[in-house]
Amino acid sequence: MNTVAQQSISADNLAKQSSAHGAVLERLRGMLPAASVITDAAGLRPYETDGLTAIREMPWVVVLPETEAQVAEIVRCCAEHGVPIIPRGAGTGLSGGARPHQKGVVLGLSKMSAILEIDPENRIAKVQAGVRNLAITQAAQTHGLYYAPDPSSQIACSIGGNVAENAGGVHCLKYGLTVNNVLGARVVMASGEIVELGGVLYDNPGPDLLALICGSEGMLGIVTQVTVALLPEPETKAVLLAAFCEVVQAGNAVAAIISAGIIPAGMEMMDKMAVQAAEAFAKAGYPLDAEAILIIELDGAAAELATLNTQVTDILRAYGAYQVDEAHDATQQARLWKGRKSAFPAIGRLSPDYLCMDGTIPRKALPKVLTEIDTISQTFGLAVANVFHAADGNLHPLVLFDANVPGQTDHAMAMGAKILEACVAAGGTVTGEHGVGVEKLDTMCVQFSSEELQQFFRLKAAVDPTDLLNPGKGIPTLTRCGELGGMHVHKGRLPFPELERF
Ligand SMILES: Cc1cc2nc3c(=O)[nH]c(=O)nc-3n(C[C@H](O)[C@H](O)[C@H](O)COP(=O)(O)OP(=O)(O)OC[C@H]3O[C@@H](n4cnc5c(N)ncnc54)[C@H](O)[C@@H]3O)c2cc1C
Image (cartoon, protein in one colour):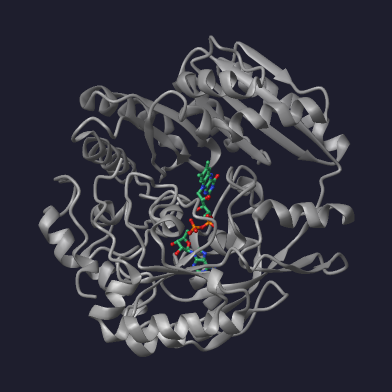
C-alpha cells in the first residue's frame, strides 16, 4: 500500500541540489557517529511510515542522537538552514504524526532510552524521551509503584511520543491521560534553546506550558526528558467480563455504571468482530456468541472492592448481560486484558489493512453513534470492528480494507472521516488520544471554525515562527478547509499543500 508515496530524493542528490541541505548533511555527519546519520534507502525504509501505514513518504535523512545536547545542535543547524524536523519516538502513532518530510530530517529519539531516576519517596520517575512506556512501570515495580497511563502499544511506544500525543489507555478513565501524570519535561525549542517545564510537583507558577506541550504532536518542541508521577499498586483488583446479546445494551450498561457514581480503573468494550478476532489471536476465554463484551477492572481496598463488585455485577445484569464472569486470579486477569490489548494486531489478521479511527463522544451518545457507525459501514460497503475505551466515550472503529484494491484506501479514509463527523455531530471530537497528525487534517475543518484554527496558527507561529517543527501536521490550513467546503462535506482526501513550500 503506497498510495501517496513519492520518489525519495537521495540525501546526497538533495544535498547537491540545495546548498542548505548540503550544509546540514555535512554538519550532521560531523556531530554524530556515521551509524546515527541514515541516508541509504534500506536504512530509511523503516521510517517511511508510522502506525498509519496508508500514508508513506521516504525521509531525506534520519538522525539518531544520544544526548540532549546533540538534539539541540541538530535543531539549531536545521533552523539556521530552514530545513524541517520531524521528531519521532517509536513510530507507533496512528495518525501519521511522524510521517517524514521528503526534504526534512527525521529526528528519532530511540537511542535516548535511559531511566535516569526512580524516586520511591516522592513517587516520581525521571526518564529520557525514548524510554518505552512499559519500561517505566517495570522499573518502578520493585518499589510497589507503577506509571498509570497504559496505551495498548505500551510495550513499544515511547514516553516522549506519549507526551506529544497526550496518550491515553485503559486506566486513564480513573487515573487520567498523560497530561495528568506528567510533572515535568525538558524540551528543545525550535531555536535550539533548552527549557525545563513543570518540575516535580503538581502545580507551578505561570501559564501551564507543560500542558501545552502535552498533545502538541512535535510541533512546538522536542521533548528530551520527562518526569512522571508514579502510583502505588492498588491493594487489590478485580477484572470482570460481561457478555451481551446487543451492542446497545452494553453501551447503556456503561452509562449506568458511571451514573451510579462508580469509576472503574478501566472499562473497555469490544463488538462481535473484535471479540472473535481477539479470541482467535489471544485465547483470552471470550464468549464467541456475544454481540458485545465489556471488560471492567475495579481496584482499591479489599473491603471496598467486594461492595463495588456486587454493585457493578447487579447493574450489568439489569442492563441485559447474559453472562458475568470474574477472573479468579492474576493470571486469568492478565489473560482477559491480553485479549483486549492484542485486539488491533488480531484485527490485522482479518483484513490486509485497517484504519484505526479515534473519535470521542459523550457517553450517553454511545448507543446512537454505534448504530450510526453500522449504517456508515453498510453504506460504504466496508466492515468495521469496534474496540474501545467505553467509559471515556473514546471510540476506536477499525475500518477494514485492502489497499491493493485501487481506490479502496481513499474510500476507507472517506468512511473514517464520516465516522468522525458523526462523533462531532453527537457533541464529540475527532480525536480522543491518537492525535491529528495528517490523518485528521480534513476532519479538523469539521470540528473547528476558521477563527479557532487561526488561534492554533498564532500559537504555533509564536513558538516556531518559521514552522520547521513537524510542519503540515495537526492544524489544517484555512485553504484546505475552504476547499472542503466547510462543515460536514467530505470530498475525499486532499494532498498536503502545507508541505510544498519547503
Ligand atoms: C497497536 C496499537 C495500539 C495503540 N493503543 C493506543 C492507546 O491505547 N492509547 C493511545 O493513546 N495511543 C495508542 N496507540 C497510538 C500510539 O502508540 C501513541 O500515540 C503513542 O503515544 C505514540 O508514541 P511513539 O513513541 O510511537 O510516537 P511516534 O509515533 O514516533 O510519534 C507520534 C507523534 O509524537 C511526536 N513525537 C514523538 N516523540 C517526540 C518527542 N520526544 N518530542 C516531541 N514530539 C515527539 C511525533 O512527531 C509524532 O507527531 C496505539 C498504537 C498501536 C500501533
